[in-house]
Image (cartoon, rainbow, N blue to C red; front, side, top):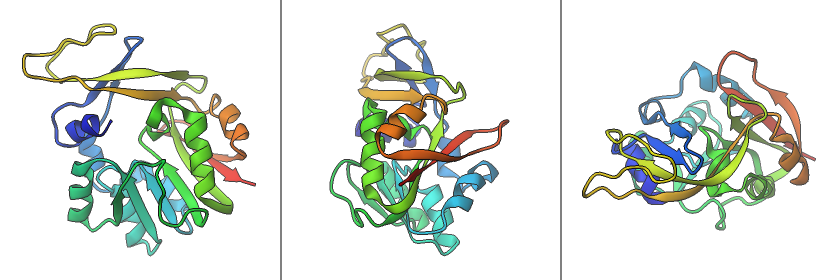
Length: 218
């Protein structure tokens, strides 16, 4: 997984091709920029110490730090670490399922930019996120545009110049596709694994833009 996201963050690809043929297009330019107005809904809800799982270049961590909120990014990507350091965003290079600083004391956990897909098992990831929270804390998840979407499987990186093919994306000589376990989840479909993880929906972003759901630990 680390190799796939290093490639995205350094501009060597912006797509994953799911094993069902659906192409996921990411926006590393937006990730490397500062937080934008669409991120405001998330940032406004982070009123206490916040950990951003899969923080990438750290735009949300940097924005929260600028607001005076204690924040920490977590990512396995070496490229992400370099970019976070460049913008002064606190970050640890670590797997989200490894032991992390402040276990059980965070007010908020972020899973933005599709990071509910990390590991290909949303239920496991939400359980992990809930374990990082203090009582009453919340997990803020960016969900897919289709509320009912529920997909789990594997996906492969695809060079921008390569036409994706079902199950076996084309590779140029010398390029190496990387396969990762991934998931895509809509806001309605998120409710079941959230409830199983001891989380309940307390807020959702207004329609018309990116979709976010806030889940509170009891």
